[in-house]
Structures are given as C-alpha cells and as structure tokens.
Amino acid sequence: MTTATQTPSTPTTVKPAPTGTGAPRDEHVRRRDPFALVRHSLTLTWRNLIKLKHQPEQLIDLTLQPVIFIVMFVYLFGGAIAGSTHDYLQFVLPGILVQTVVFASLGTGVGLCEDVAKGVFDRFRSLPISRYAPLVGAVLGDLCRYFVAIVVVFVFGTAIGFRVQTDALAVLATTGLVLLFAFGMCWIFALLGMTMKNPRSVQGIAMLIGFPLTFGANIFAQTATMPGWLQSWVKVNPVSHLTDACRGLLVGGPVATHVGWVLLWAAVFTAIFAPLTVRAYNRKS
Amino acid sequence: MTYAIQAEGLVKRYGKTTALAGIDLVARQGTVLALLGPNGAGKTTTTRMLATLIRPDAGHATVGGYDIVREAPEVRRQIGLTGQYASVDEEMSGFENLVLLGRLLDLSRADAKARARELLERFQLTDAGGRAPGTYSGGMRRRLDLAASLVGRPSFLYLDEPTTGLDPRSRGDVWDLVRSLVTDEGVTVLLTTQYLDEADQLANDIAVIDHGRVIANGDAAELKAQVGSQSLEIRPAHADRTADTVAIVSELTGLAPDLATNGLITVPVHDPDLLPVVVRRLDEAGIRASELALRMPSLDEVFLELTGHRTQDDAQKEADAA
Ligand SMILES: Nc1ncnc2c1ncn2[C@@H]1O[C@H](COP(=O)(O)OP(=O)(O)OP(=O)(O)O)[C@@H](O)[C@H]1O
Ligand SMILES: [Mg+2]
Image (cartoon, rainbow over all chains, first blue to last red; front, side, top):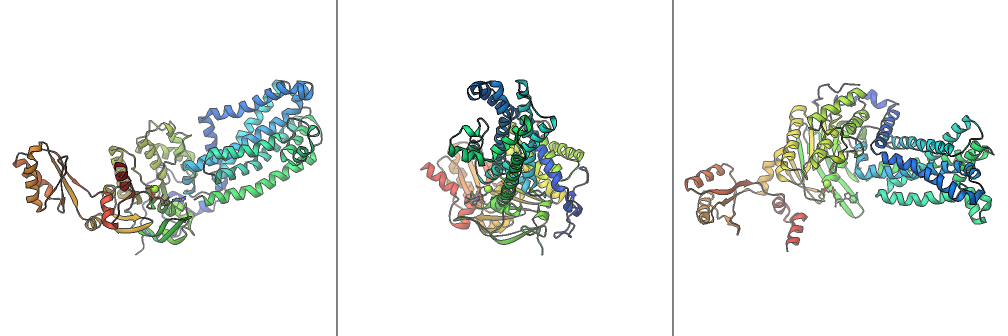
C-alpha cells in the first residue's frame, strides 16, 4: 500500500473519474479485495485485545469470577450436594466452565453498547470498511477473552484436584465446543448492545437472560433431583446440553446427542441474531 | 456548475421531531462552508447525513460527485469526520487510536505507525501519544479527534463544532489548522459552529440554519450586510469623560450612541475604517479608554435580524436572569 510519507492528494476535479480522487484509499482494486473484511476484522480484534492490556481489571474480573464460583460451590456446597468435595468437583467443573463462558458472553453486549454510546462506532461507520468488520472484530476479541477464562477454569480446577478422565483431544474438543456455543450466544447480547442506549441497562437485561440460562440448568445439580416443572425447562435449556456434552467429553458419558444439540443451538442463535445485530448496526440513528 | 458538496431538500424526522426540514447546500471544491445555527438547528444531523451515517427521509446529496445513499462507500473513501463529541477510544492510547485507523484504511503496519507519529507531532501530542485520551485535557482530546479524522488524507473534512469548549488559544490552533488544510491540501471543509466570528474567520460561505432549514446563506460579507452592522464599544477609563466620549462618537457616526449603566458606549458602525479615526480623536481629547472594540454581531443578533426570534439559548438566559 502507499506509504504514509506520500505527498498529500490534491483533488483537482469536482466530479472525479470513477477511480476516485487519487487519495491512497481510492484504489478500486482494494475495494473489491475479498480479504478486506478479514483484515479489518482482525485489526478490530487487535483493538479489543489492546483494551484488555490497558484495563487489566477486566482480566482480573474474567479470571477471579470462575475461581470464586469453583471455591464457593465445591467447598461450600460440595459436601452437602455430592457427599464429597472431590466427587462434586469432578461433577461441577465442566459446568462452571460453561457458566463462566456464558457470563463472559454477556460482556460482549456491554462492550458494543459502550462503543456506540461513545461514538467510536460512528467513526468506524464513516470509514470505507465493511459494516460487518466492527462487529466481527468485537466478537473475535471476545472469543479470546472467553478462551482466557476457559484456561483459568482448567488450570485452577486441576490445581485443586480436578482430573480429566479422557484425553487431551477431549479437552481441545471441549474448548472448541464451548467457544462455538459462546460465539452463538454472544450475538443475542450483541443485539441488546446495539439496540439499547445505556450500557448499564444492557448489563441488567443480559443478567436477566444469563441467570435462568446458567442456574436453570444442570450445572450445579443433577436434573433428576429437581421438581418436574424445573426439569422441563432444564431439559430444553441449551446450556444443559452444553454442560452434558462437556461432562461427557471430560469425565466420560454420552456425548454425541448433546454435541448435536449444542451445534444446532449455536447455529440457530447465530443465524437469527447475527443478521439482526448487523441490521441494528446499519440502522443506528 | 458542479459543486464538491451538493445537497437538495434533505429531510430527516425522528418521530414527531423534524430534525431537517429540507436542507439545501452547496460547497465549492477547496473552500470552507460553515453551517451556523443555534442548539437543535440540525447541524449535527446534516453533518452525519453527509457523512453517510444517517439516511435522508427525503432529498438527496452528493459528495465529490458520489451519492450519499447509493454510493456511500465511495463517499466514505473521501471523507474525514470529527463529530461533535469526541469519538476516540478511551481505552487505547492516542497513538494506538491513530494506528488503528491507519490499519483500517489499509496502511501497512509501518506506514500506519509513521502516519500516527506524523499526526501526533503536527497536533503537538507527541508527548501525550502514549497515554489514554481519558487523561487528556479538552483541547488535547479535540486535537486527537481531529488527527484521527485526517489519517486517511480525506478530500472532504467534516468538523462538527470543532472549537466549542476550547480556550481561545486552542481555538486559534484549530483555525490555523483548518486554514492550512484548505490552502495547502485543497481539502473541502464543512464546519458547523454556533459562533458567527468563527464562521467569519474561516468560511468562504456560510449557511445559517434554524429549525432544520437554511434561512440565509452567502459569504460573510453578504450575511453581515443582511444582518446589519458591527458595533463599536467604548468604555472611558474615567467616568467623568463619558459625556465627551459620547459627543465624539456621535459626531463621527452621526448616530446617538447607547450608554449602558456600566459606562459602556455602544454604537452601530458600517465602516470598519472608523475605528482608527475614533482612536485618534479620543487621543487628541486626552480620553483614555479602558475598553475599545469593534464587535461582530452575535449569533443572537443575526437570528433576531433573520428570523425575528431569538435563539433558544438566549431566551433561556433571560428566563434564568428574570
Ligand atoms: N437520534 C435522534 N432522535 C431523536 N431526535 C433527534 C435525534 N437526533 C437529533 N434529533 C433532534 O433533531 C434536532 C436537530 O438536532 P441536531 O443534533 O442536528 O442539532 P444541532 O444543530 O447539532 O444542535 P447542537 O448545537 O445542540 O449540537 C433536535 O431537535 C434534536 O432533538
Ligand atoms: Mg450538534
């Protein structure tokens, strides 16, 4: 691409030829560049990661929350629920993995809403980049955050005695599946972030969605121990399928059906909410 | 003739509010067009529309020959926007903000960094470049915002109230910058402001906007001619010379000056050359003035003249004072 030291473009015609006024970004070749979306999205991913660097408290938030949940549930309730904290750790850790990532995906909506409120997206929208790029960038950046959270859960869980009963491949598969599901889920919150005015209300509403999803699931207790009305919700809750899939992958048990459901849900969420989010982004004001 | 920016009948409604009620504008290539208007006039809405951020409900506009709706990507390729409220990313350093934009405009990593450094230097932000804009003063943030809109060397620069809230020195800096962009780089500038003197300083053409309509336009001189005159303001240093001063002023202007209780003597003048004459006469009479100025009509006076009503701001001030 042209260098930054190039002489300033001096447009001489009022109505430029189709090739533009000769400014560095006017080259038509670039515009048709099929990789532009990927490139710009990755640049915006970098932006979201830089923000983590400047706000380390976000990282602390991301890492501390699962640690607190693990400690609280395993040592506080573990004995009561499962009879032994070790058995309960084996049971609950895959679930906490899921819960952590679902909660992390709420943050996507808040982040997007802040970008809109601060006018950062206005500047992006005035640039000759794909309108998908800022959204894809935000989501990819968040996937990196989710990944960090997943690593924290595994490392801390292992440190206090969690043992994977399968193999390393299963751990990778779990990570991939959780990320894929989080990718689907985060579009719901992205849509909230795009349509609501205030980042705080986004946070509030996202919590309202996040709580029944994670607590109305089989993360902390076996579905069979619950009353019938709750069971009927827990059984259809996509988070339960993800939890079952992760348990199966990490400590053994049936996997295939649950994975199928998770993939389906992730696809459905993405297919519905990603286009709606893009539409909201394009319509903004 | 084809204009660099050409808008016809732009309309935008928000529910029952009509933000724009049919805006017609033209800007010539390489000149500054100022949109002058009070709060809520529709300046920001117009700017955002010409920057392809919002679509008109009716009417159409072209920027550099490209339609703002049908050819929005081409328009975006040519414009730089500095919105009314700073739109830099608080969570990245100033330098990173500029590099990010350079990368999004497809500069290579090295070029984006070089361009960022160049702009930081040009805007006297080199030392602050490593810090987050959250730590900047209002003037510095404004400068960073301006720098951000120049990363892609736009041929059209939109500045929405670029100097509101800046101290006189920073204001002067922004003015100098706009002038240099226009004269050195041939950039066409669309500038919104609430200050007539800013429009007068910078603009080749001025469009006065009120309630989503252009109520007057022309160059500064034409507008001033429509509005009337400037005023000469004098306050003698010693109150006992007030009568003498009034006598001199009325002799020179042929008008009866206004005398305020605080001793300020005001008289409309049509001829700016009068100022040195007044100064000489006061000097000869041994009168020292503690205040002596030719003042532009204020935006409120312009409004009063053009619309018969005051700007809301001023009406508010009066309500507060009452
Ligand atoms: N998104 C929106 N929703 C509803 N009303 C809006 C919206 N944007 C602008 N308006 C209304 O349109 C009118 C024009 O607003 P605009 O922001 O263009 O004015 P302005 O001239 O920029 O004012 P200011 O000097 O205060 O910045 C106002 O009455 C405003 O309330
Ligand atoms: Mg405005």
